[in-house]
Image (cartoon, rainbow, N blue to C red; front, side, top):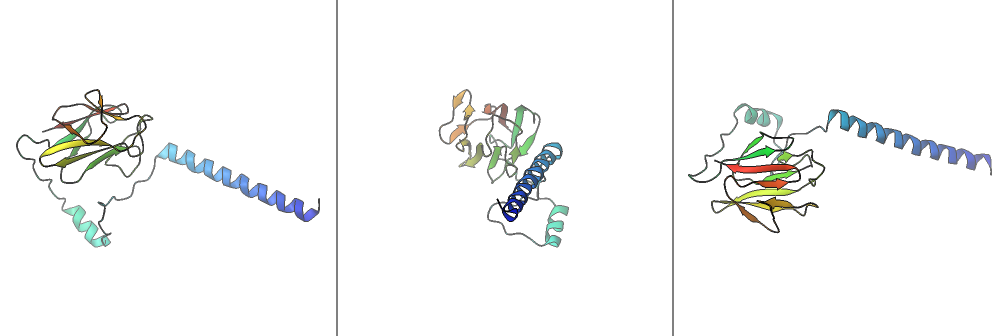
Length: 165
């Protein structure tokens, strides 16, 4: 082989080696320090200016109170996030491992976008979003949007969630 061909092969190997090293460092950094979450906006919302964002942060909106007999919070009762509560409102609550979910699980048995809780006509439903291991409502696998009553356990991987007043 000529010296030029050998030099190009060496440089190519060196470039691949550096890509591998940098990828390894990036993965180790995210494992040690976690992923960085930016400010999440609702779907369809346009980004606001920084001053408007600061004004909105200074005066947070109060969630609307649920009607009598309707759930007001979603509570994690079992799993790594036990005790976590999310106020229910007009927007759906998503659960999964991906950082853009409302409840981010660190659970090997949960999918990136595992399940979605949403309210419709005064009733709350859970819908499996095509997860690998499924979503269970009272030990029954949810195959489509499934109505959830207050206090009914919903299992997503190793995490159990309940609707409460």
